[in-house]
Each structure stands twice: as structure tokens, then as C-alpha cells.
Amino acid sequence: MARMKIHNDRNAPEKSLPTLKIFKEAKGRVPNLLGVGAASPILLQAMSDMFAHFRHTSLEIEETELVILAACREYGNACALEYQSYMAREEGVADHVIESVREKRPGDEPWQDERYNALWAFVVAVIATGGAVEDDEVKAFKKAGFSDEHMLEVLIGIHLASLFSHVARLAQLKPDPKFRWHSAGIFPWRRK
Image (spheres, one colour):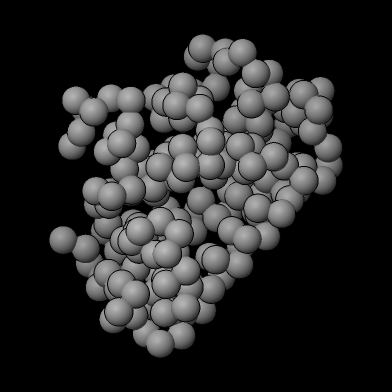
């Protein structure tokens, strides 16, 4: 049982209703994470705006999803990780990439995409050091084709994942059955 009320597109505060209705139209229902956030129309709008801005960065869509997914994994919140895994699949991130981020650490088993490896390692380094990333890590990130602009834009995704994780923890949310990685995934026998 969640510590906070989980709103939907019928009972949320009036100022939150437009955002929830848009999400419901797009995904079929409102995820619990946004339902809790709806208690504060300002928070819900901030989450929505931050996500929209992050979608318009110079990173590719799959890269933006990877940033949020990797950050959710690092923050260690199951609800946020499940939700973001589902969203990453919806945006076309390959199942093997999602599974790798969910189950492993950078360097455990290199992907075939050097750019993804560098992005993932950079996200982990930023979170682990609070932004005080070593020169070697920045060089590896840039060697993979990323720029200073990309480096700064990654911070938006990290902070979005942090916000998702903090909301889920504060509300004591469990993963939402509709927005779970395995619910429609490649391992249906692992459903929980």
C-alpha cells in the first residue's frame, strides 16, 4: 500500500488533470508514479516539462531513454526502474540493452555499441561522484562522439530519474503492474 494517494484522470486536483489525461490517452492509463505526483500540480508539471525538454536535447531518443534508465538503476528504486524500462521499450530501445542496464554494471559485458557503453559509464560516473567526474571519464565520453552539450544535457535526464526515484520512495510505491518491464516482455515466466 502506497503512503500517498495515487490519483487518476478522474480524481486528481484540477490543475493536474490535463497532464494526466494526455498521458492516459497516449499509454492507456496513468502510471502510479505520475498519479502520486499529481497531488502537486507544480511537481507534475515540472516532471512533464523536464521530460519534454530532455526529449528535445541533441541526444538521440534511444540515448535519452538509456540515460534515464541507467540513472534509475543507479538510484536503486524498483518502481522507477520498472517504469523506465517499460518506457524505454516503448521508445524502441532494444530488449537486450534494457536487460543489460537492469542486470549489470558498465564494463561487466561490453555491448557492441561503444557509444551506449560510454553514455552508460558517464551516467554512472556523474551519479557516483556527484558530478566531479575524472578527466579520463570525460575523455572517454567525448571519444565516443559526445560533446560538451551532450555532457550537460545528460544532467537533465539524471535529475529526472532522481525525481522519479524520490517520488516513488517518498510514496513507498511498488512497481505498477501495467508499467512493468516483464509484463509484456521477453521473460513472461518471470512476472511478479
